[in-house]
Length: 199
Image 1 (cartoon, one colour):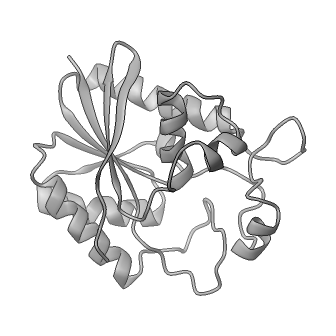
Image 2: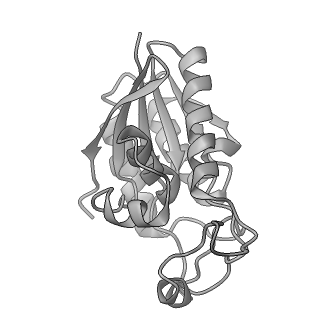
């Protein structure tokens, strides 16, 4: 049977210095982010959810907690849903923009970082494991932008590289936007945007 995953990016974050925070501690949801999570929770409450998984970072934990309170479900944490690991965390977004978002390890740099292939592999591992554990159920996965966008590359069987991520995945996932992912026969069958907060 297919397993249905509702992948959701965390809500807006308190980040007045505009830092690309990666896996750094100390970046909770803003008031706007909490409102976005409440809206997403209202939508997800109608989807017959069986379990909630989340990246263990503060912003995703808070998002999952808001959703879980409304759905009366606990949160299970998975490192496979974590943000990208990169030595460039702590740099400003202005700097990250100036290097064209080159935060991933690849054959052209010597960054101490994950490659996009590694990000895709752990998202695939998450899908495979939870499909086994929750076959035929509806699962929430609270994660981060790049891991969620890698789902589109995996579904479209495109190479996991930065050019494809930026140019062949469509609009970047918004805070608390929800993608419905159908997974069956060891494969992503579909990735469809089903909810976006109106704030």
